[in-house]
Image (cartoon, rainbow, N blue to C red; front, side):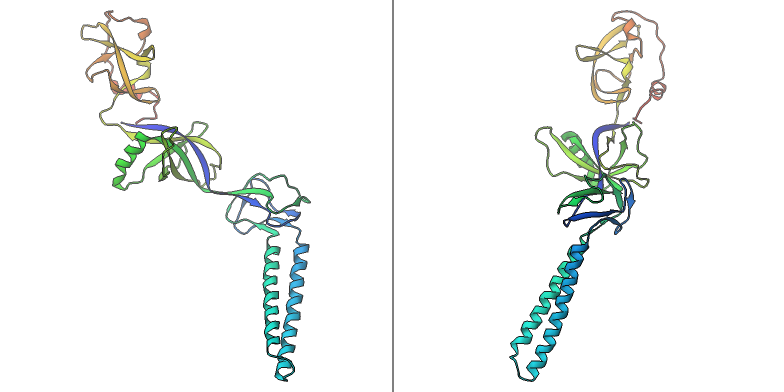
Length: 320
């Protein structure tokens, strides 16, 4: 049978970054709203560009002056009035002015905050139109959620079983159970494993990738990964057929004469409504399905044998 082992997970956007001011100045315009879908290159915020435009104009004027000076010096050299080093110095001044223009244009460009990729705008920081921004102030965040990375931790035993079966080169598929207990319709694919174990918990982190075509999943959500695990020759019983005494689990076994016997069972795995047994029962033994709280060991009862498959099919299971 196949059961789904559950692991608490954290949902992260494949890209999630902070949008920060790259220049100091007053926030002039906000072109988007929180939660809005935006496209790469779309204008998001405008910082007042006046000072930076003035720097560009100044650099342009210095370039014009340097060009005129260079032409004059070249003419004077041809007439043998000045030395040949003067045009070289003028050419250096022109190159410096051109570099300063490129820098000024870069600073001017930083006053326009544009979307670096397609995504969803997050919550705004403490900003409004007219806010005075310093370099590095947080404006908002942007998340690309067309694919989602889901992180979860698994114990060493599960890791070793996974690595043992990985040689067949078939990607492990997993499901995602959301906070409302519904299973996300898209299956995820196991992609990466963290490099080392957590010495405190003994777990190692896995990452699965899910497509998110309808943008249902958002950065920061939580859920549970359902990892299907196949058990061969599994012996299963309904949880309702067991009872506990001092943290030990028991069933009432019925012999061929109808006499009840108390039997301890060892549970290997637990799934919704069923236990997968490690030991305690043989496949050909009978046990009380329900109502054991009204019975006692040593009693003789009349019984009816039920088809085990129909009993299991009547339970609400994640297992198959």
